[in-house]
Length: 105
Image 1 (cartoon, rainbow, N blue to C red):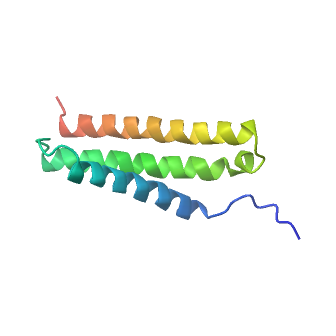
Image 2 (cartoon, rainbow, N blue to C red):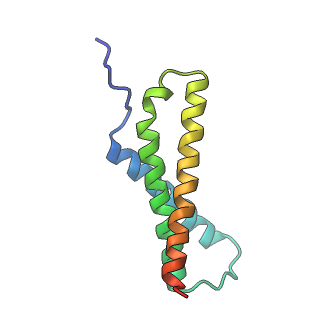
C-alpha cells in the first residue's frame, strides 16, 4: 500500500536537523576560521541564536514543502530554493533582532 504521507521525517526532526546543521557550521567557522574576530560573549550568543533559529525555520519550511519535493522536476527545485530562502531570510531577521537587542542605541 502506498502512503499519502510525503514526509520522510517528522516536523520536529526537520527543525532539529536545521538547527543542528546551522549551529555546527557556525561553530566550525568560529573554531577554524580566522582567530582574530574580537567577538564578545553576547555577540557570540546572538550569532549562534540567530543562525540556529534561522535553521529551525528553514527546517520547518523544508518539511512544509515536502509535498512539492516528492513530485520531482521543477517543483523539487522550487521547494529547495524556497527552503533556502526561508532559512536565509529568517537568519538575517533573527540576527537583526539580536543586534538591536545587544546594541539598543
